[in-house]
Length: 341
Ligand code: 0CH
Ligand code: SF4
Image (cartoon, rainbow, N blue to C red):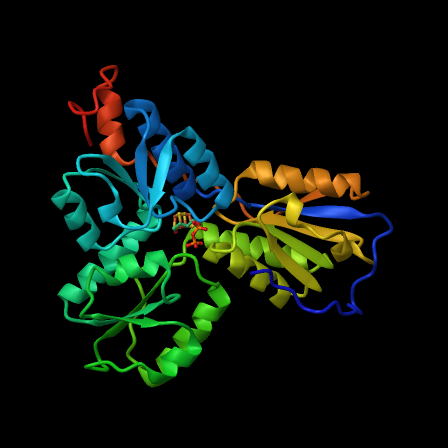
């Protein structure tokens, strides 16, 4: 889905003399994506191809195609993985039933769920054990939401935006908590929370932000670009929730137009009509090489002045999934049957 609004004049914005690009920082891969992609690469290195991956490891076409070329096989269902094989679970997390299915098929599982998604799973388990009704704010059908709901299906109700908030029912209004998907729009989530709070004044909030640091930082950065850019380009795939939210954030913050593109090939020259300042950024699952490609494309069209707009420093890193750390310690055997995760 490409999102755009019709071009409008921006009265408060003086046009800079030269064509330029404002490049957001931070942008692109977050710590959870870096870890998940590295997990598939390490698994291929340790055990050789094929390595099965349940669901796209991250929602990015280029990442998936690159890993496929190295020997990863992507499947949607656990039953598609041959018995006894190695399977990596995607960064978005899974329901406990998936772990059970994998055990049933005697799969060697490497869990690349982002630790910040796991944190939300743990919150859900804890509140469910305390008999709370959990209102999970998130997008229906999204892989992460399916996984989190699976932790306590009888206690979790999905709330997909402010409209849902008006209709949701709970058992006991004094014992309700909201949690959320990690990659939502911060602004829309707060609207949903406000709507929920008017209905349930005792609504409890999560102990710390569920929308993760990377999602928040990328939205803040793209909003900053949008103050000065007529056109904002977000590099990311259509099924990437956080990337789509960045397009919406840009439009909400005043960009005349904003587009989500997988790579430079998808940019339409017509978008540059009357545009002197282009804002450029990328979603948490989009590799930097694709941003480089867009920059080159823009430079060739005269947007050679590139200025970084920095709104935060990021230093978060996560170590590889424990199953791989264990096997890396027992290198060099590389006998997949002896050292399966
Ligand atoms: O933004 P979503 O959740 O669709 O996922 P992505 O594009 O694969 O980005 C990485 C986030 C993974 C889990 O939080
Ligand atoms: Fe983890 Fe946030 Fe990245 Fe998702 S977007 S993988 S929760 S750091």
